[in-house]
Length: 118
Ligand code: 5GP
Ligand code: ZN
Image (cartoon, rainbow, N blue to C red; front, side, top):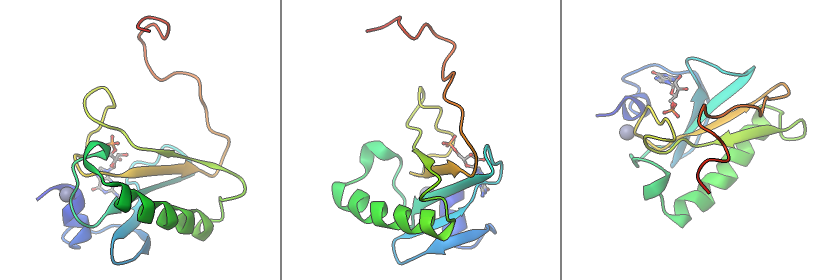
């Protein structure tokens, strides 16, 4: 069982912000911004590559609720999902990072030449 499935099953403790039947939102253990929450489906899905439109539709509403719960919906935030090797996805259970609580940087995502490929 993957680490996020263990969090869903409460085998690993987490600091939960919000949950419903389908989704769970909890604090990232290693925050990269003053607000750094992970939103996951309770049923295991490997990554964004495998998710259905219906799950994304439901997840959109849930993410809106999380941003309201955190009171960042007006100040702004970023929603990120890392996919696969180049996306630097470490945990192979679909998750959306919700980061905010301060002005975020947007300066440097890769050491490769950004004009190199296309
Ligand atoms: P990824 O790199 O896969 O997009 O992000 C995985 C995230 O999960 C990382 O930001 C990491 O800090 C977080 N993480 C990994 N293990 C745990 C854990 O056991 N508990 C919590 N709350 N976060 C975790
Ligand atoms: Zn899982």
